[in-house]
Image 1 (tube, rainbow, N blue to C red):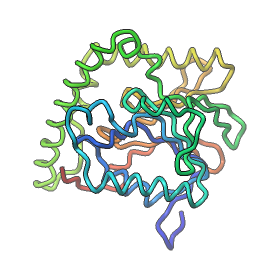
Image 2 (spheres, rainbow, N blue to C red):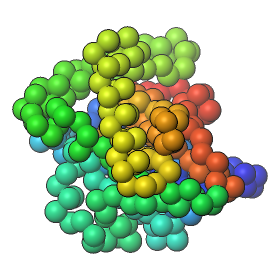
Image 3 (cartoon, one colour):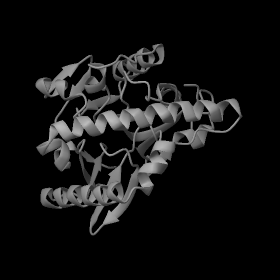
Image 4 (cartoon, one colour):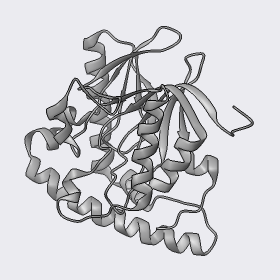
Length: 257
């Protein structure tokens, strides 16, 4: 921790599923996170912009501009920023292996930790059967999910007015749905299998909006979560140890809609 600036420095940070441009995006939380952390490597693991939803409705606020500017500023000041597009910002997949404002756009990446472990960094939508093989169904599911997130915003506005901290109604309901739990388990196993085939020690992904870090056989599966429900990031400490940060809980901020 840099006590003077109140900034904690990590070796690497992974964030994904920000969904800038939507009402459900918790940009204020993320901006606070970016102001209070720094790193040698910063991975943007897909769905940073939600181009899918912006085609139907526009939810861009000033805080969304501030997040983009903060990311660009970090890249200019020497942080190695790598953007791996997801399915919601797949437009950027047309520009793979190019740079944008000192941000590298890559299809995937191998990250080597301080203690020598190798991690495949990938968004993960390639391993989602619904997205890959039935995009129309994914869009329908996305509409339903957007509705749920809108309810989540209203729910937390009421909690904020009564002095209660942020709590994700949408994440809670998803954890209680049997089919969602089964899907998440299959997704995690598929990513672990891919990492095993690649001969790496672990995988870092996003996509399903569920922060998790656990061993699946001999593979360390890491999902950095999201910034619409859980407000989480994955970090690598200077000694190579990995940790999931639940920023809303750490900062105990009250979130306005």
